[in-house]
Length: 189
Image (cartoon, rainbow, N blue to C red; front, side):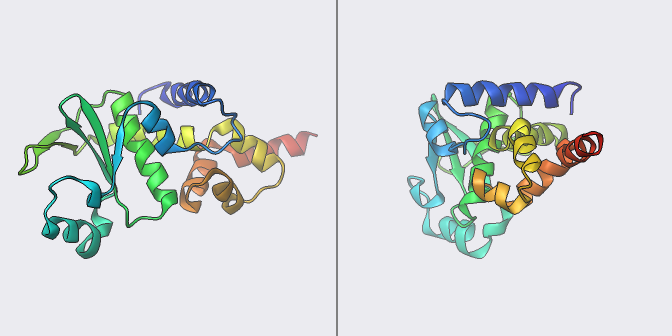
């Protein structure tokens, strides 16, 4: 991840939350946010012309092989999210795909579907890390985590409060160093 990106991600999160009239303690609603930008969100079942066999592959046979994809339809941006995943994971997927768009990431590989849809995929590892970090920063802002942890909230409670998975809350608390910060603060008070 490039130097200074984590700070930049927190700043982007703060700006987005202000734009949405949200504080660091409020739940961020990815679908509403994306709709406000004119981004269309589809599940596989909503993709026009998707053959039944492809829908079955994506949602029945191998639903764990993918989370989401951003595509361009002319001037329209569409994010297709895996409807078989829990809503908490879908929230992170939507923001992860948005982060790639927002940060103007260029994929290693660009594929086209049989119908001519442009499918963006296979980003370099560094860009995936940036998208992960930005998505998590928007959904779980560090300042909000500090507030919650300083009041003794457990990570599962934080996850429920923000509408994200426990795995994401655990990762974010660990990676931001919030628990160490709270522990140090308590030692010196």
